[in-house]
Image (tube, rainbow, N blue to C red; front, side, top):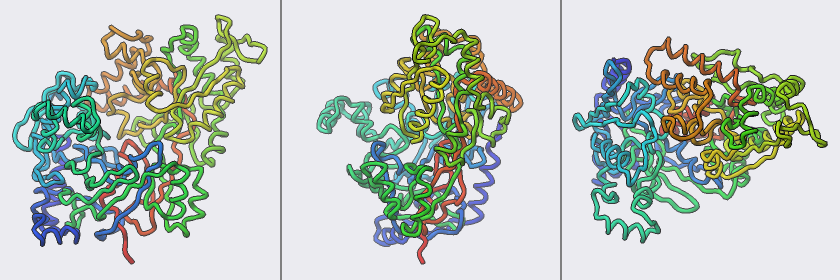
Amino acid sequence: MFRKLAFTVLLVILSISLFAAVYNEAPILAEKVRNGELPPVAERLPENPLVIQVYEEIGQYGGEIYVGAANPRGFGTDLHVTGFEPPLAFNMDATVGPNVIENWYYSEDFMTATLHIRKGIRWSDGAPLTADDMLFWWNDEVYNKELVESIYITEFQDTKLEKIDDYTVKFTFSKPFPNFDYSLAKQWGYLGYWFRPAHFLKQYHPSYTDRDKLMEAAKAAGFDTVRAYYYSIAGWSAKPIYPGIPTLIAYKLVEARPDYWVWDRNPYYWKVDEAGNQLPYLDRIVVKRIENVETLQGQILSGQIDIEVWSTSLDNYPLYRQNEAAGGYRTLLWQSDRGAEVMYMLNLTVKDPVLREIFNDVRFRRALSVAIDRDEINELLYFGRAVVRQMTLHPTSKYYDPAWEMAYAQFDPAMASKLLDDMGLAKRDSDGFRLRPDGKRLAITIEYWPEEPATKSPMSELVKEYWENVGIQVALKPQDRSLNAQRAEANEIDVNVWHGGGVSDASWPFAIGLVPALPHKGISWAPEWGLWKTSNGTEGMEPTEEGKRLFDLGDRFFATDSEDEKAAIAHEIWQMQADNVWMIGTVGLAPYPIIVRQNLRNVPEVGVFSGDFLWLHGYHPEQFFLKQK
């Protein structure tokens, strides 16, 4: 019952024994203390600050760094260096540890979870963080139908949250939820946050402020609804978007212009290094919005960007290395966590009934998989540095089986042709393309958002060539991300494309949707099955027996705390993916270039660039610092 508590207690003892409430702070904050603008640092920190172990050395205070954010993505890169602060944290060994929540425990039946908030944490404006901030998020956002139209996390349906005291809350679930702590450590939390600064947001909330006044303010700001106006202040995700809104992360947003955003250190940040120095070390982060990725690459090479982790690319790696001395930076090669850098998902619920029958024949998916020349993809797009593999688990996973990596991942166009012939697709038209059973040309369209990663387009050109070589006509349709998601949800896509992340033990076993992704309404391989599942069979399309089996396995995985049972279920799930190739992988585990200014230290030379660990957050960017000579 107390399986997470021992580590937390050890950390608390460590923090008490190290510091005995003696702390240091940045000179810029010490000056404000002397001027009476801030209370002393010991009063700004919680009773037991979270201790962060530095990677190289105790840092030096001060300085600012520049980060680039290229269009069309725009601002967003800043999250990698300003950080995330979910209730719990993923450690780099895929365990869950304390963060805002200091300790927690379940009831024996996993029907309740009790959370203890780290006592004394303050928002960036100095207001205390309490259980009321979690209750505000839950009652006034999640369960406020004007602001949140539906509860999309199944486990939160009919869940109750109650306040025990100012620093303790208890969740009561409608069914056992033994993996709730992993949900608490996920990237965005639920609808962005688990805690909200209630003292600040009440002035924009229709339950606390006169609606007529709110509508007047909304219209003046260019919004048609109170809901839109509220979220323009509160934000939808872990990233603050309104200057001045109180935050728990290491930096507070102080200026948001179309061409740059400015983040200043949070004077109430609640983490320290081993020597008792309040973090972060840096005074300021400036994020520059740059017209396009090409312009950003030029600024990287000329040394105008101090750290870049989002818009780099492996194809530019030789160029990065050639310009290191002139640009004053170093190029680190971290490993991607992706089981597939790019994967192809045939829609098993596609509207065309003839195409649907073809897609649901496993021989067709196997044929497409073995028609792909993965070695050529690796050499042409990844300098031979990626791993030829099927979409499957990361090798570090405790559930990993190496046999899955090459399941229908060999290049064998003769085998592909035979499989297609055996399906009854041997007839061809005058152009050499195969004919469907209804006599029409067998043609499919691959739709995709051409970013994340940028190799989607050149790889899809190669895949088009491979599949046409075995007689299937292919059209490519790159599109905006939001349009792609809309079309996927509407069941309008033949073949969708995504990266195959989320396959480490820090993510897939504890995510809301399993990987192999349980089909859902969004970007997946059988959206109508997902609709059938979520509507309890009243909508969507009834799955095959294998599809139903996958749903059942997912339900069982989330409901058990038995490691033996989890291992057995995981093996069956991933064996089903190996046999069925619902997601057709290409290459994976490619290196990922990270650009870092020479004197920006405590950035690990070797790392994993992974959404599973919140990208840089697992390496604690609050302890990055500028080393002075």
